[in-house]
Image (cartoon, rainbow, N blue to C red; front, side, top):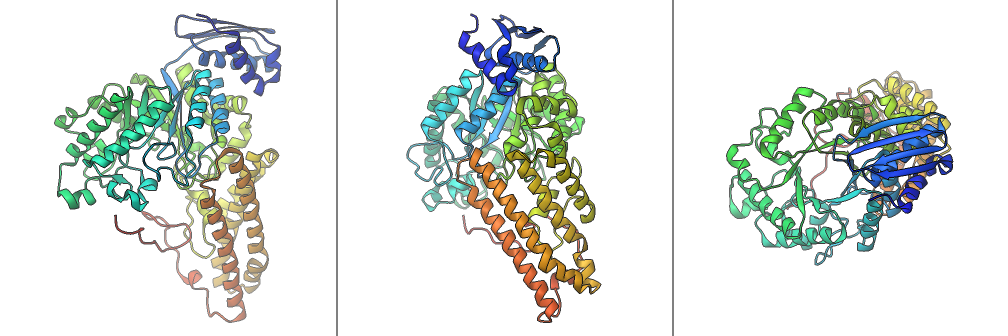
Length: 602
């Protein structure tokens, strides 16, 4: 069966959105019986032999790119992973609009990525639970069906990634759902009301999406069986508890014709003396493995670059189930800009081992932890790290990946390289963000370097991104760098100049520098609001605007405190009198040494 005129035209249209001259190409497309993608381009004539319409779109894109460069093309590629795609986090505040999801899928199709996982904790419609997705921007049935139809037209499979144990704190916060709680964010196992909920979830996903696969979550269900469950039932074998629940959930999935997969970490955490996922001494007993139903395990790892550890994890997963899914990460959850270094280092370590271990499904996760401050479109140029590992059988250099990412997304390689300067290196996970939110008086900002060095780095990033500030993404990144740099510059000298009694400096900070900081915060807020309005539903923005507001009001408060000190109303600025210690800690905030009590009893 060959490609229809509409399918060829759609692929040409996608490529022409990036390279308008693609419309002048004469495209001869043949659907092959095998798995290979063959592309030949000479002059204005492109001959493409592709196994499916997703590969066809890649072939047309590569032809259009070569045509734009005035090059000939003669290549043969084969998918080394049956499924290669991304996971979008739609549950940490930012729920992407349908049009934005389509735009992401357009880029995926150009790169030949055929798998999209939608991480939806409570942002899809189910019957009988009115607080499920309440005030969270949940999708309607119509919206999800539209997303699925569009994906099918591009040869992309959309898989629902839901939660059926942990990570349901948004839903469980409401008093009406109290009977379903074990822990604050964990469901009560063995309670039939829990399985009524889970059946409603799975039934909805089965009816709204055409994929017959479903991701049932179950990661990071910390304390499962130790909250209300423990109070009601006493101590229990937690391995047995997890397996019993998993069997119930898998049976429900199978009832609706769905093949389940799940995050694997709870097995390894329960087998570890420290509760660590990546503990090489962790042991999942054989008797536990015998109780695990037929569910694919997803090994997620966006933290490690040690081949020995990663290989060990693949072997341990193989003990439990032969068909492991690997989920790596494009780091969108470190703050306002993607962590380019960490994305590359971890991907370059893990993807070759996926190839060696015969992994068939590889997913690049784009999480939105802590409010989804980083717009996913900033990170799309990093997708070729995964797409090229799939089609070429090797991880490209970062430079090559960003060149192809620029061609597919239109976001310049140099702009991505500039954003990388928001972090000091591959192991910096929060540095720049701490300066955006950090308090001027409290030395809690991190980043692996002295503030004066970070300020210089941020200023360099600001200058590098400046040529691209004519776009909404570039404007946002420029504003991020400007504010972080200015705050780091003030932090570098404030305490030293205070202790030296430099009142002229302090007056300048209070009267000039802090008002400038407030204006820079307003500029960042404005550019961020524009991006959010363009790509997201309005829900969740209230969290970020509250943070921006708090930062600006605290700046005014610090200015007042300095002025009171200068006028003699205060004898000292107490926070600047204290000797700074390392800001490293288990948890807390960027702006205070205090932590706050939990929301209350379970």
